[in-house]
Structures are given as structure tokens and as C-alpha cells.
Image 1 (tube, rainbow, N blue to C red):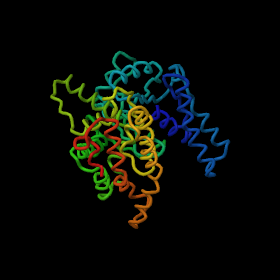
Image 2 (image 1 turned 90 degrees about the horizontal axis):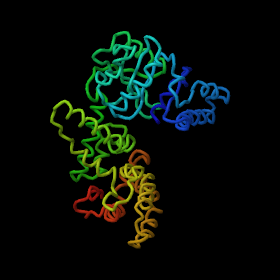
Image 3 (image 1 turned 135 degrees about the vertical axis):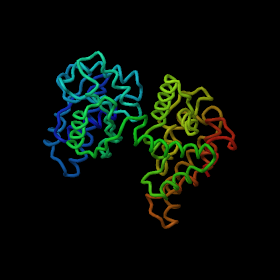
Image 4 (image 1 turned 180 degrees about the horizontal axis):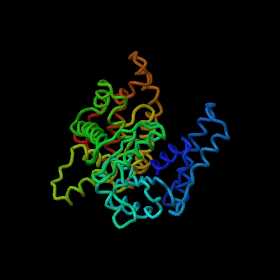
Length: 369
């Protein structure tokens, strides 16, 4: 996936040879292509020559087999936030880990001590298991959270710390707990913002409140980047773990909003399209893409109504309207994108009724005005 591709880039760009394994060779090649794209950008900027870029790409070996991992000193598992899947992948690659090597999991929420149980029955000890939490996109985010499990040895911790510095990232070391440090803080930030939207506060107000207190990006925009599907997957795993431990599970109010946004068109029986559903909070130019995709996926207007042409004509002037509103305020054009929400309230209300079959008084987006 994209996280594995980013980690491969972090290694190769620092001169470290790595093996990029995915479910298929095509997917692995796609991950390598991500590094090629970044290198092409650097070539255009004059930061690298063609030969230097090729030398970096040669350090990434894409594969669909575990064989090329044989003898690796460090293996980082970076699959989805699912305990069973992570355990299966860990057991699959452990025979390839070099004696005394480090097995790491790139997890954002799952406790490392529990994931380390997958080491049982292998030639390796839980002392050699640690958490390395990279942040997306890896090529831009400098922080790496190192999670020390209950049985993680001091030597493993020291080697992980050195590795993070070797690839030019900033390490922070935390103890083991669900969500660790970053995801607990980040999760609260995003879930509270979603809950406020669900309670009726305008999305623009929520975003601007975050910017006003100094956050570089609004909580809803951050959620858009992370994706609704990942948020729901994390919540589902947390609920499953809590039930397994006999602990009462209480969902955060923001999760109901995430669930609604992840599949807006379920009432009409259409195929859910998370690509446009999760970008519903985007601002500026992305609003035009959101509406175009929504109209296409839900097929609004072709068979039932005659509003499609009206919607598209409104969309045509979206960017101009948004830009004029910003320039008229005298504020910086790029820093106040969320004000554009108010210019499109009529479109969103109509879209809400057409796709969700909800009345504006009770729908999630009725307050975007």
C-alpha cells in the first residue's frame, strides 16, 4: 500500500537497500513507482540527475514472494489495522528475519505487546519486536513514533532509535497503550470535530476554529486525508478488542458521522464510492471534484430529476466564486479556503436531498451554510 511505498522511499532515498513486498508483483511495482514519481519531481527541480535517481530506484526491490526478505536485519509490517491480518503477515515473514534481527509493526493504534504474540513458536523472541509508527505521507512527515512493548528489549529499542535517525526522521519513544500518544491526541482532535458537525455546528466554523488556535490544518481536512474507511477500521478493531477483554465499549459520537459519510448513498442501494464520500469535507477546488463525482456515482438527474444541468452550471462557477469571496475579504487566498463552504450551501442541500433522501432539517450537511 501507500504506507509501504512511503517507507521504501524513506529507506532508498537515504541509501538503504530494501525489499518492497506486496500481495502481487503489480502492487509492489506500483509502490516503487511512487518513489519514481518523487524522483522525477526532484529531477525537474534540478536536485537530482537521471543517474542519481536511477541509483535510488535500484535500491528498491519489488516482490510478491517472501524469499527476497531472507536475511533482512529489519522487517516492517505495514498492513491494515487488523490484528489477525498483522499476525498472519508477521508469521509469514519471520522465517526470513536475520538472527537477532528486529521485527517491527507500523501500527497507529494496536498495542505492541499484543501484536508481539505472533512471535511465539518462531526462532525469534518477543524481545525483538517493536512498534514503528510512520505518518502519511511518509516522504513529508518527519515524525516516527517508536513504541516499546512490555517485552521489548533495550537493545531493540536502541537499534530502532538509530534506524529512525539513519533515515532522517525524528524519533519519539512512547510506552505501549492503545493509540500510543499521537493517535490518542489526533483521534480526539478529529472525533470531536466530527461530533460537532453531527450536533449541528457548521463545518466551516469547526475548521476555522482549529485554524484560529494555531493548527496548521483543520480537523475535517485531516480526516479527509486519513480517510473515513481507515477511521472506521480502527474503531471496529478497538471495539472487537474491548469486547474480547470484557470491557464495555462506548463509541464516540463522531463515529456515527464517520459511518454516515463513508457510504452516503446506501439508502438508494447504489455502490458506495468512498473516494467522493470521504472528500465531502474538502474545501476550495476539491469541492468541484466532490460534486462531479457525487453526481456521477449517484446518477442524480438522469432518470429521476432534471437538476443535473443546473448543478453542473453552478459547479462551473465554484472556483471563481470562492476566489472572489476570499479576495474581497482582504485575507490570504490560500489560508482561508474553508470560507468557501458558505458559497455552496444551496448545492449541498440539493445534493443531500437527492443522494441521501434526507430532509435538510435532520441531515448531517444541513448546517453547512
